[in-house]
Length: 506
Image (cartoon, helix red, strand yellow):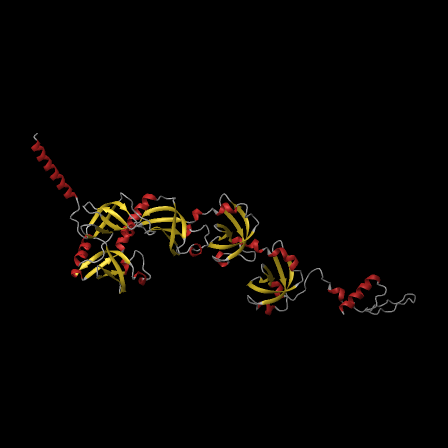
């Protein structure tokens, strides 16, 4: 090949290469274009980007930092930015379009879904007036954030990126949304969260909201999980607001991560209590049968009431263990959830995690002291509980009820008065009999009382005067001697006792 041909081929090859370079370069960039470039240098205030053109781009370092001020990119990373302005020396880039611009730029931003920077100027009916490229546009209150806005005024004066969602009437009706961009960012975070987090992971989060059924915890920007009330604490009696408050930093265990049925967002179940010690391991050896404890009623059932005797540890008080004083048919008649009660531990089964409790044993058996409190023949005041065909039940003391039989009422001499008694009336009666084995007390009213101090009425009666005997014929026989009260001669010891009894009677 000749030298001339070589020169010709070289010129053609150089021209082709130059043309190819020109076609691959971004020398035709315009303001508003979205470009993808590579970080080539980072300084204190700026980040320089290879734009693929003859001029490098520059973006403010603060635009590429996170909420804590940490830079999110490094040399060699690829970023997507918008051309804000350009000249022969530099291309100014930004994550969103801002600054001075015309109506055409806003239209292009709408058509290309390019974020535009705007400043919230004021509130208005239904939303906000936002200043954007020297124009005022409207942002509905529902589009300013992803959550419910309680204080609209707090947004006034703040600057954000917005996406134009409506461009009508040649720019006279422009509606923007910040929410759209936030949701896009949150979706990216959620996707990464699903990749990085599995069930059983332990994460740090911030309490955002408290509801009666549980607590919401923010795990990452736009990623929330819920701690159901049953997973807040081992204790069933604790209320959510008693455990955490909005803004609290908490450690939680991830129970499950699922995509919502509507496909929007994640359903993340969390637990606080699973990071706490199991309370059943804590009570072993500390709570024993026979211990008397004050607990709190958690819930009532047909067969009894569950009482929490330690955080997360519950026992059952069966209805048969609620009262010595009366028959309990419903637990709700005696206790209510949240009520504090004294209980005695009857039995503990650590293997089955069951504890049997008794309220009546904690209160004490009133029949244990009956023999010391009441005596046969004692006159007492009681309260009528109820009536029956065979008598009247009268309460003598808490847990002690006696029966006044109808047979005693009819012999009392005040039958009408006793039969007129109603439940709640006070009445004075006497103890006739006490049977501690069968737990029965028989009462009487206004009749002779049998007992240890009973004295035969005959002992107090005066002896009838002796009749004068007719004189006998035999003069050697003397007439019988009569005995008057006070004259006991000839009766010896028996006469002395009779005289003493008569004196006592008088």
